[in-house]
Length: 77
Image 1 (cartoon, helix red, strand yellow):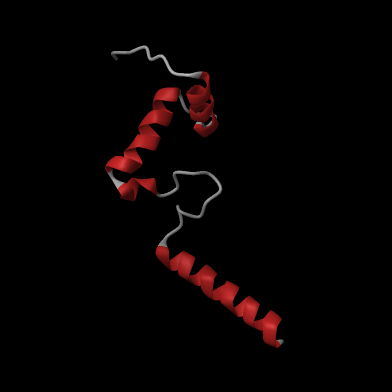
Image 2 (spheres, one colour):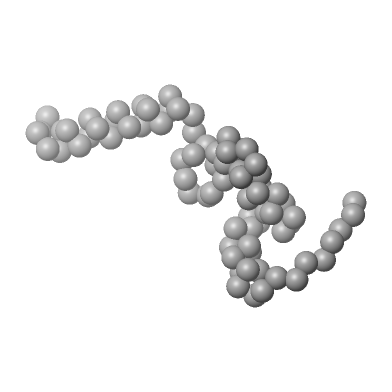
């Protein structure tokens, strides 16, 4: 494997570090973050704490449940 050394500012390093997952190298982080720009479909699940990794049907079902809950809160059930 060929490696390159980069010089980045401390701010840039901290930003990159904030995206780093426990099991990733910095090369993995750069590859993961830049893959989404090359192919937007690869952005699914890119950020922790989002539901981007769930499929459309599951998201639709969750939305329906939330609508039902709000309806019950507003109009009683």
